[in-house]
Image (cartoon, rainbow, N blue to C red; front, side, top):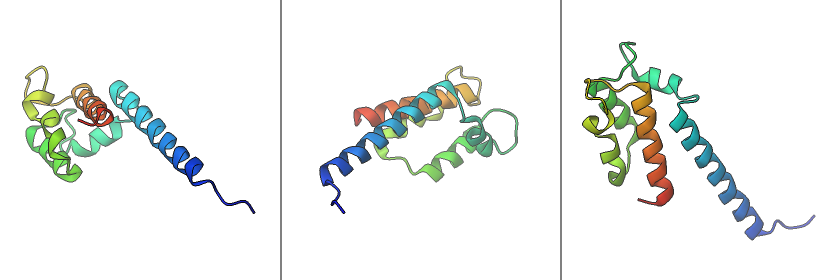
Length: 104
């Protein structure tokens, strides 16, 4: 039996992570498959996240400090209506993924 080539194993792992990251970012930007996650945090089921619901979501995520400004309520609530819609939430998720890819 041939020993696995460490370089090939590492390259395969890196490629897998990149594909998963790209797929997640694309899904986040389009909202595909993200509605159930959003709905789990919409405690009262009104279709928008309140400031308290968004804070609860973020407290569970434990984001690195460098990404926390992406999720500032006033930043995510793009239309200023006092609630975060699915589109606004997925937009913030897409921005987070873009920053993660850029390493910022």
